[in-house]
Length: 400
Ligand SMILES: Cc1ncc(COP(=O)(O)O)c(C=O)c1O
Image: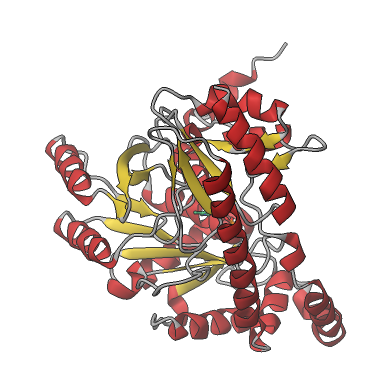
């Protein structure tokens, strides 16, 4: 038997499987109602429009779009994205934008260009599990800071940063999912956004803003993006996955030109370019003005589902001290906290027996300690499933 372990790099040896991916395998069994995945509703995908665009493009430009493309991205798509960002108050030059193979690749590129083994990254706790996985693969030291109703606890963040600096370990960046965070649904308030910029400036850190859900605001005012508040210290990741469809695996990274150009070089080594064919289809989709329409359609559908899930939680959940859930103004998720003595990992088997699934809170904790929380997705399940699923989940909690 060959000992393959001996061949692994130190980084590879430390890589861990995503708990979510493992759990999702279990939730695939027939009859299960899953609030676990972060999946968009498939009935929202604009299948007809995409089909027409594809056949038109193949007839017109087939030979061009089936070829390799530039690492920076397909120019017509980059231009559409620049206009899109401009409509959101962010003016960028074309060299400040690279099309990426979705935001998960953006997280990997961020790890590649910024993180040496043991480098400190500040982030909220809970945070997006895929970011933990990406940064872990570069052996980063991730420091999780408690999250409050209006975003990361900035006081605690500053204290921890000072401690690291005193140990000669200045953090590299603060990683944030500022809008309808995955997993909590929490949005960082304007006051805290400004405070976070102040902290980044004072201690000379970067901010990595990962914002797949920003456009999916169901009510209230949009908060300004970090990149619109500071163009020098912020790298922002966006994706088509939640506002259009995830199957094409496309997103975009923006930031200061020299950082973006460094990411372009890193990307060259990873995949040469994001799929030109997919980029051409999305460029055409945007050119026809269909993206805004698509987002409006999704918002209406998801708002209704969020309201429905909240109403069912109000109706079915037992009256337990400490049991609460967030009421996000957008996005795909809400976050349920159980009384302190309860453990959602232990409870997971009971839930599967009752044919309902969620994601355990510990998956979103860089230290894996979180015990009494869970993430619920409201975009994927149908209303009937939400009704049944929340009823079953309430029974599981009551029986504990
Ligand atoms: C905060 C966050 N970042 C990044 C991603 C990765 O998405 P994608 O690679 O499809 O753009 C997700 C997906 O759920 C996410 O929630």
